[in-house]
Length: 213
Image (cartoon, rainbow, N blue to C red):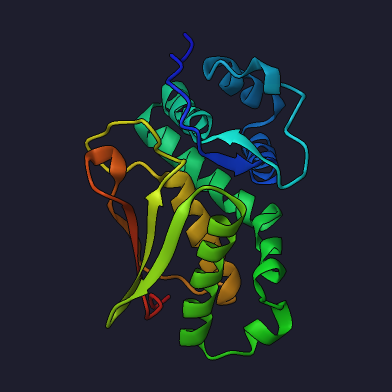
């Protein structure tokens, strides 16, 4: 069973981000699992042929959404969610964390900051990295006891419709970013709105205080 293609969005991720994400999926699923996923998503041209490791904006948001939807087709909604979360985490760990220097964050200086500033600066830098290298529109808002990570043009759920929020890959990236930025502390993170459910933006709520171990 293969996935039906949707119209292209005209908005793009850079090749490097997609390459990192595909490498993360392959690490989680194995080479054969990734090949099966790409066959379901009608992206056979990517089998053993990942996008180049450059920042050229050439991978359409609709295709990125296809990848994530194909995970659900393979493993069901719950299994697809778990896989996308793991792939998102791996993607941050395997390469996306290296985008920090592009937006002015040096590892040593950053990790010396107080926790609340690491959260604010780290989330802001993550949003800036995606906004500056892709056609994704994202930013961070600070509230009294939490932050909102807002994606107004979301590649994860582009063109999809769902009853519940489905941007699990983005959730995985945020979770691993928090893990890296706070030396392993855990925070309550929830996707509180999603474009796929009819909301104007995909929004993640991140608590300011860590969860007690």
